[in-house]
Length: 264
Image (tube, rainbow, N blue to C red; front, side, top):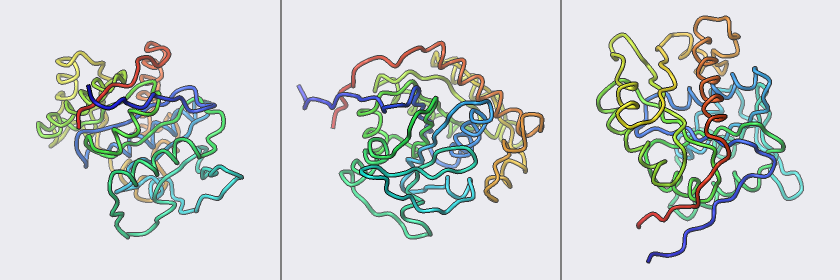
């Protein structure tokens, strides 16, 4: 038998924790995380957003804020941005200086973000995971009780192959897969691959998102498209996705299952 795995713990005051992952980079995972979090907030939910992509923290750019977090007693106060409570390595180590850390240091900062940030009472904490299936993902998913995970992919064959690995990662760590999202759907990227992959793996398909200039421009300028409101045609799909995620959360019920041993 291998070493005993840490017991998963909930985050005080947080009702649902949802991890958004992808098998590879460049699929728009952070765009999906930010816009779904904002859509849920505009639907009247109390929402936090944890940017756990420590090597490429893009959430500060997408939300248009570069504040630095302050201490509140023994806790770290999250940044308040556009109705969200936010924490990101990008607030602590801003600019283009690369982060060159090994596994134990990554584990430490992730646990700080989870346990020492004063998240308060939240309906949802959305966690934007790094792409892939590395140390950060394992550290977080093995130690934190999650309601479920969402996998973002594009319709391309390369992206779908890696998306399958992300689904299997969640399943191996006993995290319910709330569903798969096909981003950048249509046009030169093709369409339908995300739905077919989800169906073949027995996981729900949450919806397809087209690639629209307003989505890209909004993220680059720190004003995500969802802030335009649900009636804006480019924002509507994110609200539909947020409602699909919320429906899956309700269907999944309370988080369940012990932590699961992963071989070294």
